[in-house]
Length: 164
Length: 164
DNA sequence: TCCAATGATTGGTAGTCACCAATGATTGGA
DNA sequence: TCCAATCATTGGTGACTACCAATCATTGGA
Image (cartoon, rainbow over all chains, first blue to last red; front, side):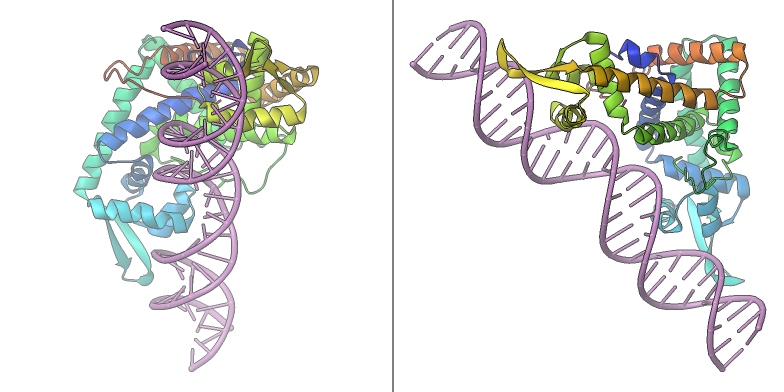
């Protein structure tokens, strides 16, 4: 552990604590996914396809909040890995249609397993009730933020926030 | 909102949700600190000095889990801003002793204010009990992680984790 | 039939982060 | 008095993230 100490004064600032906690968890997630040959973006894109079925590349980018130009390499990866099929839309040959392959679905399941393992390790010190509570609050806050909960004071305009 | 949708399938993966929540909150924190001419590292360093009093630069770096070479610019900033004084240790002239100035302390207070404002906005949808619960769980998990809670399966060796 | 809009792509910028090797000054102990 | 260790510093790397402008093919509608 490189950071044996998290200054008490900083501990009082919950936002720092949250940020630090999440960053570390996220690092672990990245590591575990890497062991399976995946990265976080892979999982995010696969999730979109799992939920929406075949999707136009541009629409997927927009769903993910990613710049279309940055989407190119992400899709490349997935296609090369055989997790996604990319085909021109016959009815509009400018578009690519992304389709999940069976292998892609498997990989997504696998990512889910890794996530659960990691979550289990993280929540180890919590009992069942606390886990429920944690999960509920987490999703509540996430929803609040996604609904623009932090824009209240200055109703910011073009705020970006991709990042799987 | 660039990300109108967070795929349901991804929502099921709490670690992604946590990561995303924290990343956004962190972005806001960065913005608000910037309005005051500060960044997150400034606050982290100031916190160390608040808690430990005058500190050898190297020790501060080590407390923060930061590479000593990366500490240089961070300290530069603080010194130039007049928030920290950097003086050679008379008893060992290789060392720098970092000391908080009154202005530095003020800035730290200010950072605390910004953090509380942001926290307030984030926790707006929670009632008093839920806030208590959230805070307790957050610190519990943070402590667990800091104690190496995620190293259980593979007892990793040189794991770094700075980042204020 | 021609033009403005759309979708994918290329290439480039800028910031942040974590790391590492090398250097020069200084120290304390052999 | 000399050497190995320590401290701050310089400079450079590689990754990842978020952008933006320009290009090219294609489309649908005027």
